Every structure is written in C-alpha cells, then in structure tokens.
Amino acid sequence: MVGAATTSSSRRPRGLPARWRLRAPADVGLLEAGVGPGADAGPRGGPGLPAGPGRDRRQSGLRAAGRWWAGRRDPADPEVSPQATRLDGLPPVDVLVGDRDILRPAVETLAERARDADVDLRVHEVTSMFHVWMTRAIPEGRRTRRALVALLRTTAASPPG
Image 1 (tube, rainbow, N blue to C red):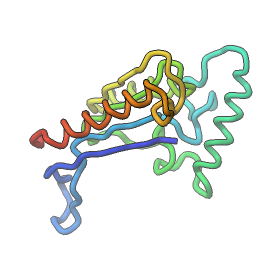
Image 2 (cartoon, rainbow, N blue to C red; image 1 turned 90 degrees about the vertical axis):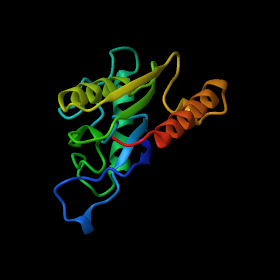
Image 3 (tube, rainbow, N blue to C red; image 1 turned 60 degrees about the vertical axis):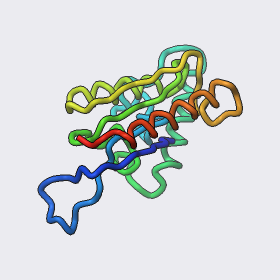
C-alpha cells in the first residue's frame, strides 16, 4: 500500500554506539504515501475520504485493505501505518500522488505532520491520476517512473548533508 525508495548517504544517526549505527537514507521517495490500516474516516484515519457517491463502499474497501496490510499486527503499529509513525529525524521525503487518488486526503495529513516535525516533505501531484497509476502501462505511468528514477539519481549523486 506504500511503496518507498531511498538513497543512502554517509549520514548516520547520532547517539548510538558506532557498531549499532546504520547508514541513514539521504532521501525517501513515497508512492501512494499515507495509507495504512487506519486510512478511513475513523479516529486514526485523518480527514477521511471526500464526500460523494460510493463513499461508504470506498471506506469499507480501505478498511479491508488495511486489515490485510496489517496482518496480525495492530493497525496502529507504526511499522504498518505511516500515519502512526514518528516523523521527526526523517531525511527529505518526496511523495508522488495523483490528484484523484483515493488516498489524497491522507497525503495532506502526512504533509501537515511532516511540517510540524520540521521534515522536508515535497508532494508531487500528478493531474487526473488515480491510485497506483504509476504501475500502469499508460503514458502518465511511464513519465512518473522516469521522474522517480531521475529524482533518485539526483539525490544519490548529491553530497550528504
């Protein structure tokens, strides 16, 4: 439900013994960000889905997908729900989302939380695109995949810090 790609740098988290430090990502690219088991109009789901015909069916489908995604874990577990994850300390984050994506409201919530945590989060919205458009064999999907590759290459080539 969330696709992510990272590029790493020599930056390492502080405050840990050297042998425990892992290479920290220099940038995170998210596809369909912000969804998790709570991505509905419930108490943990942020603003929920926009009103309109079929809203109840969409919410029901999101809840079912969220339960599948969580498996045996609690839906509030940060490992499965980006909306429950602490954002402070994250490297810059690029989010690709369609303006007609069913999860677009969750991206807004994620962006607000990132601002509150002083995380550099950039939303790249693609006009007239729907959920998972970038996986489809359509011109917009191909353009988005090329843009993501270019973004990752640029980030990987940038000096850390």
